[in-house]
Image (cartoon, rainbow, N blue to C red; front, side, top):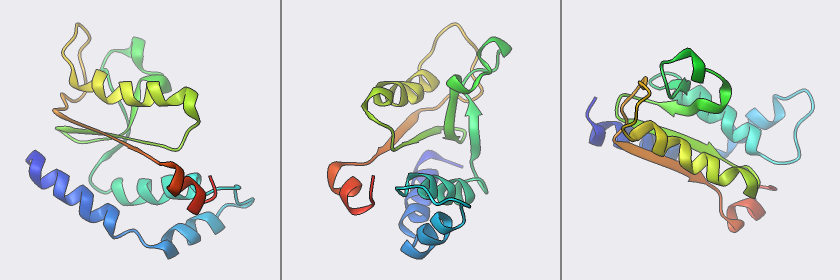
Length: 130
């Protein structure tokens, strides 16, 4: 799928997520968490897993197969990180899609040309209890 088509498809998918889907995901946990980060991640994972690889390894070499070297979601040309973490994790979350798209000596699973990070701002955090 070309980048433009993949990107448009991703935006449509995100725009179609309803408040009710997030609320249902939040209530599905045996002990609902304080905020909605887990629910949002769950909904995104359910929706994106149909056409995206979930928790895709960045590199194909076994040496880099642990969870630290994974993208939240990946397709042929697009890598996607979704983060609601505290400040200490932001740099790493911003860096992973860059690593996935840049040429270096380690063979990659995907050669992404488009990298995306979805983060929440203060208004989002206040409205959704983060």
